Length: 290
Ligand code: OGA
Ligand code: MN
Image (cartoon, rainbow, N blue to C red; front, side, top):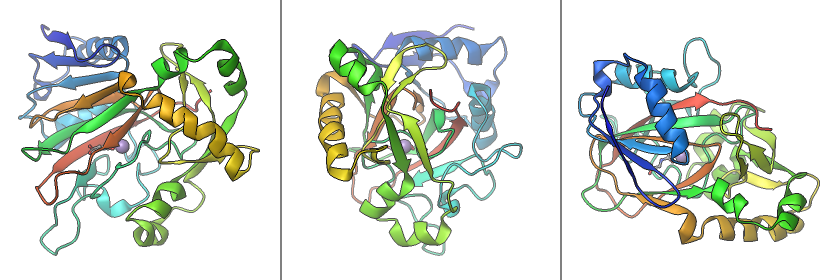
């Protein structure tokens, strides 16, 4: 099992080349990749996966952790079930394309706000695995912010102030401010899309502390009113999204990205108009944050 690893930025990311996930995961390939991933801030891109079928994608995802939508797991990873692949409940489609009947094939503009996938569930996502099947020639990059580094750089006073706090995460926050309100309300799974999590979480594999709040899904700090929450959260978001903490991914066709939602936020840049974009995601169910 030979592959090359190249760092992508100072604080975040590894580029992996020389492997073909469609050939299976023999020789503890998934374990070796997991090590590279955790050693590079929870982000890696595996280039050149043009042979990756949906089944092989799901097999790789399942090797990274239990998947949302898998037959032996409950809930779907998303509130809008029609964005789930009709043949593969583990696969969530991110796309601006339309199907034969003119319905969106996937969620257009998904994630055009800083967020951590599924943070509104009691057990949010750990890894997300996103396979780029069709991408615009220009635009449609994705940003990743390192919330471990952002937390580590705070003063001890600030860290101690933040550690006891909990934040409320609610899918309504994104739904209210985005395109999806009518669809979401009709398709919502009552009560399953709201959770309270520590504002600073400790990674269950690396032990590192990270900020765990995001503008996409965090509604407020538990026990604080809306204004008071903003006084704390908005400066934290400004801090965490400083360019120093960000890696910007320029997609190549058949990149497979793996990112860690426990320690990163991401943002999908919607700057490509109607140029077709189609990606498939599997998502691992993480532990309850502590
Ligand atoms: C996602 C997501 C970003 C993108 O799939 O979770 O936020 O650029 N996608 O499509
Ligand atoms: Mn996302």
